[in-house]
Amino acid sequence: MEIFLSTITMALVVFSMTGMLVGVVAGAIPGLNGGMAMALTLPLTFYMDPVSAQGLLIGMYVGGVSGGLISGILIGIPGSPTAVMTTLDGHAMAKKGQASRALALGIGASFVGGMLGWLVLAFLSAPLAAVALKFGNFETTALVITGILLIAAVGSGSLSKALLAGALGALCSIPGLDPIDATPRLTLGIADMQSGFGLIPVILGIFAFAPILHDLLTNRTAAPQQVSTTTSMKRHFFAVLTYPWNLIRSSAIGTAIGALPGVGAAIGAIVSYSIARITSQKPETFGSGEPEGIVAAEAANNATVMGALIPMIALGIPGSAADVILIAALTLQNVQLGPLMIIDHPKEFYGIISAALIANFAMLFFMVLASRHLLFVLKMPKYILTPTILFFCMVGTLTYSNNPFELWVFFGFAAVGLIFLSSGIPLPAFIIGFVLTPIGEEAVRAAMMESRGSLMPFVTRPVPLVLLSLSLLAVLWAASQELKKRKLTA
Image 1: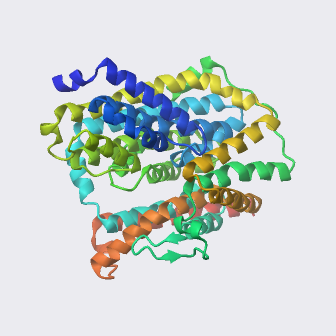
Image 2: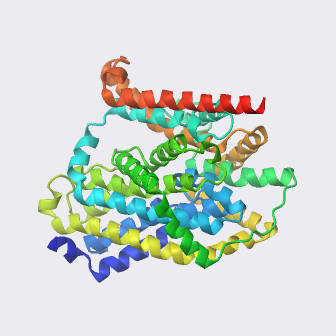
């Protein structure tokens, strides 16, 4: 306890708050994210104290994940892939004039999820890391299949269209180099296609430019929206505590999935949101401005950040791409991660835990403060807001890889998104399939090599069996809900 308290210095507080502020800004701007800010800052950490360096980077990590909800709620563009699920209900609430309520619920859920995840990080790292280490390729494959099939639960419209969108998203993730033997596939002889379609250009094209084109072509215009007062925002912030079971369940899901190396925060938000919808007494309201959807997605997002730190400090294994940068920063300082870190480097060990705690409180303070001033975005006329969004999307696309080819990807998927919107095909389902398929492909191929082509481990191992059973139940539940709707409208 004394070592933990000794790491909470003014330097750590300042660097954690600075990093968090940079991360929130990067996460809120479409096309940028906290990971980019961390990568750019990495060389500077070589000249810093190890604890201060971790404070700066972890602050960016937390801020980047949290900041994505700002643009997702206000303008309907996820600032980061982790904010896709938040955007579903958050932007719908904003269009109803409840932007301040949506922001307050999102920020509150992020804070609570981060705090619950931090408690697990601080007190249960070792046992949870040991369990995560036993999570093999079959378990990862089953988890990804579960995430993709939960599209059925996420989609508020047609089940068949949601599954079609997920399948198309999976198909679009295939072009590029084979992850096992690096053989080019579906590249059409184009050298730039060997890297596949970038996630950032795809998300921006689908979620940002496509809705703009759709509104222009259908002659839709939106009047400046009325926003709530700061007083009501404070009231809505405390209203997040009226969803205790949702907060606890979503935080637990996010922490557990975050602790699985290489899985990522996106699955945590998808699973949490889907379970919240399945267990809700009014599932039909999800996707059209349901507060429980925002709470579930954001609590899981920030809990995933804390969960991803568990295998990093306990085993030396990165739980996410951002953790790779954190490990690199510590390696530059000759700090060895793993089971012996708490003995060999106790100051750095507790410094990471302290930085995560400070960053979470800093996120709460800055985002509540900033959100009061960000609501002016909803009052901007379309002729100013639309070109501004397009500008940031193009800058974000070029920043992603500094390759002009990504602009063609951006415009191409904007056209795809326009077709989807015109046909009533859900955009989030496409992104879910696009994001999860590469993770699942590597896992399933490794699993097949491990079992020499046998599928039996999917039913003989308890975790894959439970996950696949839940997937089947989710699809059956979604099908039953759709049949009920058809009977009511018949």
